[in-house]
Image (cartoon, rainbow, N blue to C red; front, side, top):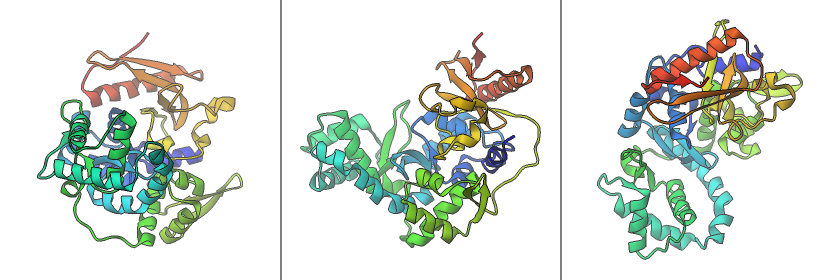
Length: 354
């Protein structure tokens, strides 16, 4: 197995799951990309000893883990205790990056201040409301929300401004809650301390990785990322002439038996890296295949990307496998075992397509 891929599998606890709670996995990884909500729960489940989907849903309902836009501008699971300092560190750059789109939609500071106040009043005293409900409230307050994009940008800015954050789901609908009612108070952190903490979380679970990998994941500028690495006192190493960094306390494993994983389309094992070549060796000249677009979720054998999979939603969901390389009989058996793990996690049958 590629040594970098094996080390990353171990550090992310995909070789030997060590945790029993969803919060422990999210704390370990720092943040878990989560625009595919169901996939993100499966990503957490694979890094635990025995959690099932309902366990992680319950943790989300309680607010043990939260979902918001942080780091680079996409959804992530984070812990309440990390929400303030992570947003303080990364939100200013995300706001700057979205400023042009805001102007194009006619949104400015005055409108955002008004919408934030309306949202704050609507969510006081434990109220949790859906996007549709909040849209109606904003409109009654005199804010015109003519398109979905306008509404999305108003909510996005309220998240970055630490006004709102995820509430519990209502059926299949997501809700928003007041940030200060879901996130414990905390004094602002020294920027160097916050950057060092972010770097340590990243490299402890993704070692070895490059500066540009960390820049991609964190949303920090290159200079800030290098400063964070210095503060975290990471260990430099070289592979094929390229500079990598690693954390001294990254998890390791002596496991040598082969293992297959059915990873979700935004799993941190590969989405957390700018350069994903370490897991694409078996693809050869097709290493440029986009994990999250062309084939959906990823099949991995011994840490190497070998194809895609999809599951038809529903109680009798069909698992469709699309290998991009020839798999041996033994490897197919490993993939079958991974399917059974998915079945146990979901608590419903998962039948492989013929």
